[in-house]
Length: 328
Image 1 (cartoon, rainbow, N blue to C red):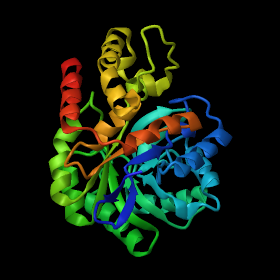
Image 2: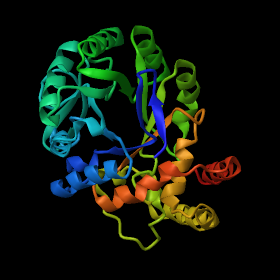
Image 3: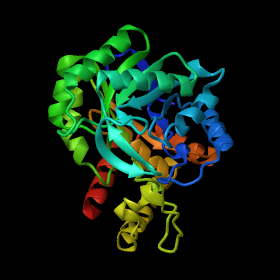
């Protein structure tokens, strides 16, 4: 698979990564088959996907535990990304949400991150993290200066516990703070051809500061795979219930895209999933957008991987964007 540089860190990774949110198996996604999840992570690497992303909050530690099992004896085969700044096992912080019987809090204080990274390293069965990402940013009711957070992350980097620093779910002012107080290599934001606002905000900033833009949910949690029809049953869960495109009145527009892009699928000998992933990786300056695609079955990862090997004609990519803009 095509490779790309992650910020200025010196890390190189496949342009498509595997996201392990659903592997956590919490109420967002429902039950997950752990042995199949492990097989999926192994299959991803076999097919050329090197970047593997998880977080403590996914399944309240369970995703990291499953990833840890998958990494046994294979740690050096993967670029491993996990996160900090979200606690369900502490009392201090601002409320992010209540889920699965616990209060999930935002807390990016150095003292909290110091506990978090040790817990993550233990669950992941490793002694270092390749990319360590602040999952959600502090709120006014529990303020934490980014200078404090970044200062501690830089110390973790100096100590060899992490190799690169990322931040997620932030605004332009917070981006500037991260760049000011340390070495920011990656931001992780929701982005798809149907939800382009954050790309408009950050692509130029990332280009200017040599920061990788890693987009999560580029397939809009499956709606852009082309597999749904107006009669398709949908196992919604909390995650999919938040995506408006699964509603009948919007699904018809997606079905229209599927039909319209059949000639493109024929041209590139690929599926709609492949087209969308390839289109996503071409955004920004064409070199610094990384597509993070969730998978918890080997079939899903096999479906995703081809998108990282396709280069679309710029005219086709522009036409796809125009089609997406027309419905969104």
